[in-house]
Length: 506
Image (cartoon, rainbow, N blue to C red):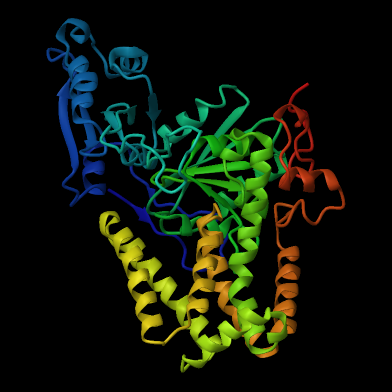
């Protein structure tokens, strides 16, 4: 009765996204066979209006739907003898159900079994009319979801306190609350052979470039994966340089930052089951941007922005700079400081590069321990562990105090980077720069930085350079990125992202 067609094994066969096909007429027995060994599948025979001679089957997946809503909004009106007792045919019953006999706002009529199965898995209850070979489905998703709460990672100082959750429709509503315009378009598509996860592409019509929107939709349609259960299952298929260690998509858990990116011409993605919004094309200024940049007074925001970029530079180069000076360029250190460094180094049995690399590794271990442990214990372990290890290393004369200061300053500077993935990339690049400084001192550090900048200049996403606007010849976007101006001076959007409707305000 049931024919399940698996996807072809030949990798060269044309199959943009193979899906399981249930080649069987819509019948209760066929559904029972499809959902065999599924204890959460419920199927209940019901007579329309109780006294009528028309039998239908109501089915749903327990836990995925709200059992109370199924009872009150589907079963109760369907068996109401005062309203449906006079029904004499299945076609008349189906027509009345479609026109409002069942109290649900979302109604779909299905004639294919695979569409019916997809609706059931997505949180619908179905009324099956076997005589007509069709089913009417109603959205009765379970409301047992995590409520909207405050952001955990991207703390809000002056902005909104709400954050994305794991429910797709709740997340799109949070964005709609900030962009109350029909120009906000939301286009959904399922991703994953087994998971059928709904992914929503959000953009502002007339602002986002249509060719970029279509390119994102095409990439989602071409994805051929088993399931989408995390951001790592989606991101490599959307970016143009999947082997690059630098993050090329913006990640945010704050709807206000997500909405601001859409206003700038970016394209957003929200996946069901993920409490994070993705923004593309990703650029370095996007990753370094904080929502409070628009909330603070423009002079203060400019100072904080410059401080943030300075922190990025210090986090990346400070350990390598110390190693290069300590090994090859001692004349760059003032005399009194040089005497202090020499004295501390003489009491330590290891060289400066070994100490710095060991401290960087210890710093990463402490940070990972703080992340993996429960929040109530992790912060205590990180702080006390750093204090105890650092104090013990100095007391035992295993590490010099100045080396611990350098690594600590680099770590603190890295925490000023808003994007967590970019901060993680910087932490590993520190070690590479330290090795370059060991090999050739300041020359090696300069050469490594030049190669890094050259590599970043080669990256782009959707036709936008990763270092935009730092690689542009125009001065205005560059200064607008580093130095804030009063809000009323922002008349136009970035021309690299928006080709039409560039004007923001009069």
